[in-house]
Length: 318
Image (cartoon, rainbow, N blue to C red; front, side, top):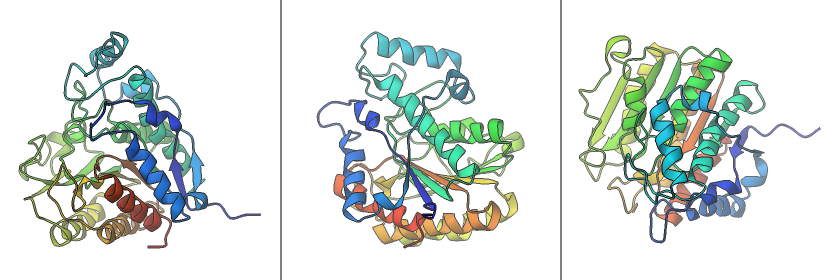
């Protein structure tokens, strides 16, 4: 009997059906470029491919308001080309695809927590970490990683979730959702100043969440020393105190060198090292249970190379 692949990929042709218009950086070709690179390197066939499901209203309402869900549905039904709450393009199937993006993370949670695989990478779009409870923005519609965290807690009895975000932009939506929550540790490295303008080091949480929101803002030009250093020096220690039962990663590859929307200088090797750190944390505290989701990354060749480095490291070969 063949051994179970250690790593799953969430993949679907449907993720190409969220159409953003010619020249938009968050384009369907982002997913295609990654999958082509994984196949070229012989990585794709060594993973377990998982199909997403549609996130239900109940899934989405754990992180978003009923009013916001109605706004998204109405905007898409009315044929709007842009979400009325923020800077996110829309097309005819955007609501369905956004539900499949969130549902892709839920399928990954099910697979990892059932022990079907050790870890998973969800190659979904649109991205999610800028979506707040009441607003989609920054190319995002639903906050897939936050929805996954809440789902793991509600459906699988997970008590404490760590979310780490290495996208070049601050995950303002994720921060807002969990800012007063004592069950989620949120750790974010990002370029500052840069869109969306949040993520100051002084934003550390409130109430039960005080101290569980850790922002590490860095100037343009930052790279391995600053970002990998923050993960090693601050996140490992915070995770030791928090003891997560599930580890989630907002894997934004726009923090890579030469991305058109960011000024960080991470290399493909740096992403492998960051992935290794997250695997170390997951191994130490929750049996290796780790799930990443695609956020940013807009230089197609750079995105593909960085994502392949990440997946290779998840699989244990880099």
